[in-house]
Image 1 (cartoon, one colour):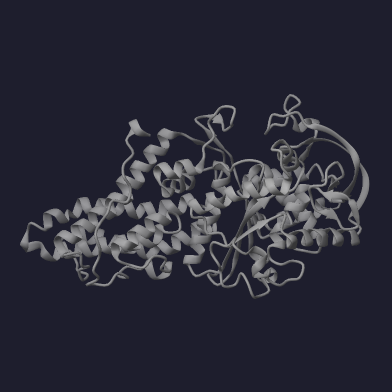
Image 2 (image 1 turned 90 degrees about the vertical axis):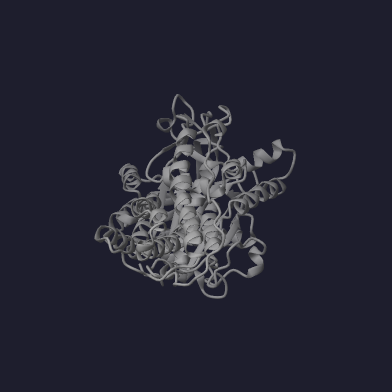
Length: 538
């Protein structure tokens, strides 16, 4: 990978049957952090999210609400926009499966599969979980119920069109074995390889019992199964099958961050080889075995990578409306700040396995890392700069004390290594590890303040050079942290930049360099970044 290589980052299309919760926000925060980081590195980025609006579940929910499916979807999608705007999610494209260009692409893909002899009619008999919009077998169930939604699947019998999924068992397995990084983490890859040993079974791809979906182009009695429809969004958003960019008016009003390459070129060929799907573990099978088989059947290479994260529990229990313990991301962000939500998701979230949201841990992590760690470092550094140097960055100087000079040089070396360390971690989708690299600098710098004690140096006229050395070093650290935290904690990055009197959003390669903040630069008024959370108010 080079910074010039593009990256196409996608979340799943979230279903419009209900409000978005912490799980949806987690996937989207992961994606947004990746997008922000690589943009700051100068890498071309396209970040896609959207809404899944077809299927039996939506038809059922709309009927219960006394409206039609499209009106129902419009209302729910409006809430999606509100949440992502409130959380400052910088997606490039928001796609809806009711978009005409998407429906056209879906029909084109299945026309191609049909032409290749990969679809046929047959009798569909299955246990179908409407909430999952997927088939189950008896062995998938727990005491006769869906293990995810705890509902009893419907017994469905109807004439459907089927996709010859069974023809792709070996090709999908060989692709994974040849490209082990195509599914991460490793445990998820092994899970899929294990299921492939059982062999793929042909899959029903159409329905006749309702009409809310994309019609099959050669058999209008059938609408496509919702998964067969929704998965195509990842290529329809790139203008497939024409290979040209979508017209701007196709997604007018739905862009929050317009990348210069997103419109006006041939984006499918440009972006698709560098596609990274971020999904929850419950839909990994659909995004690998099913989706890749559809792509291979249509003559399209699978995406470069699928990252599947785990689930949240809350205080040890499953998150559910019944228990009344659903974590609403906007509630957390409104009460504690958007960065507080992002930091906890990135540090304690289910990136490598399931995670448990515990309020006591949330408060402890916030107070230790954000309030006492980063916030305290930035605030006391800039306050001392204002008090001892009139807010101006002093010229670089060396300590007379060899031990202190060793600490200063070590800080400089850590700053100069930080970009490489962050790039390596983010490339591995290890966002917690990337934050740990930043917090190593935060901890070292706070220890440096305690050891060098500028507040004592300022009282000794004979140690003027040592004070200059200490304050220059702290200015460089704060400047580096301003840039380093911005992709992960955007509000903090913006606020530190304002206190340094710098324009926000400067490129990372320029910011993560010792000495990048020039001598004589005038800083602004220090303001606390994070107020401590008191346990009684948590």
